[in-house]
Length: 88
Image (tube, rainbow, N blue to C red; front, top):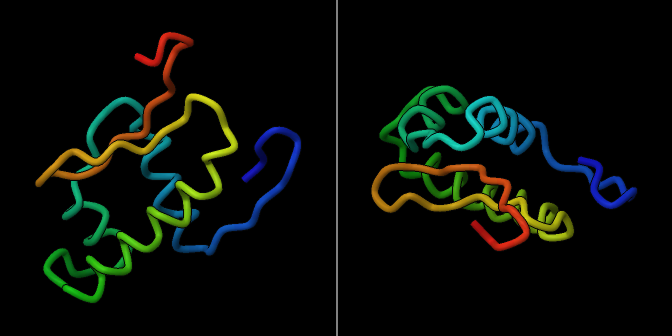
């Protein structure tokens, strides 16, 4: 991931998750969809924990990128958003 001219590396798994979020920017990507696509099992507790870790890793890299956020949609999934200068 390149941010502010600085390159940061993420795992192949995090890269695939970020790709899914980018392809659906501004829309909710359901947890079950990510879990099924990346780990092959939408009901795996291991995969659910790993997804949370990967999202946190992606957020750590994106924090340098002003206005780009991954929003939790409680009980549903995640949404990648690019905020305007006002924060909307």
